[in-house]
Image (cartoon, rainbow, N blue to C red; front, side, top):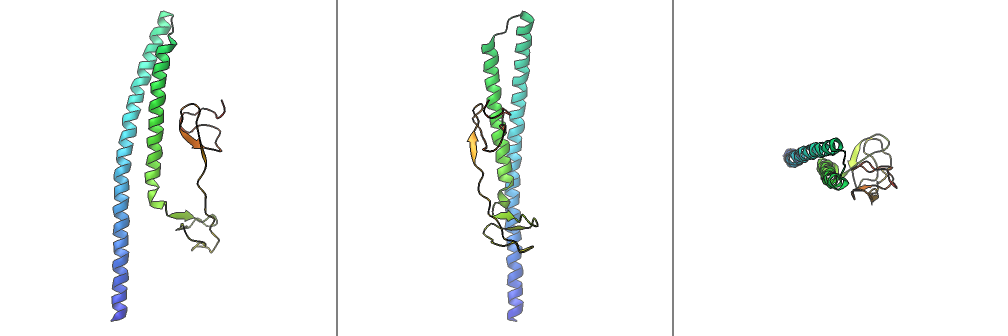
Length: 161
């Protein structure tokens, strides 16, 4: 009788864990959908600014006079939109990876293991804990980019230019 009770308790526990995991996935999915909508709205704003910039440049070229101040202001607004889009897409990635934040991946066999595991449950290899990657600020758009990268992930400018 005690064995039956233990099995029922274990099954109920697994069922509750599955329910909580699916509930968390649903919340993450909802948040991701909202962030993707925000990216789409920002992209539409960017397209409108690009159209405005193109019209202004075309008009100035047709007149034979280019006023860099007007173009620089529009380019600055576009850069702000690019940074906001990049930041929002980065947040989408962070929210989407929320569920895996307590997991590491075995470098030997690819099995997902708990972050505090010392050995892989799939192959027995020692798990190397990965440190957080260092970042630096882009001199052009001021977003954070990986320290070892050659180009900014937001604006595409080569580091050091």
